[in-house]
Length: 88
Image 1: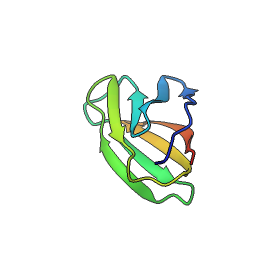
Image 2: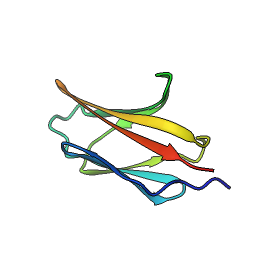
Image 3: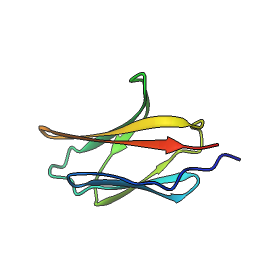
């Protein structure tokens, strides 16, 4: 079973942390009703995408391999990002 490093990344109003080894918690207060997230690998491939409708969004990362990833938040004309790692 993979474990996830319990580090958090903070940029402006974006915070990323791990609630369990299978759940990424994204803390972000959306400015619009069209806020989206993309979870990408370091090559830019989008692996998971979804909507952000409230300040706390949970993302299932069970299918991700140990590696480094980037979370992008697209909210109107605002873009935020956070880099995180899943450790073996």
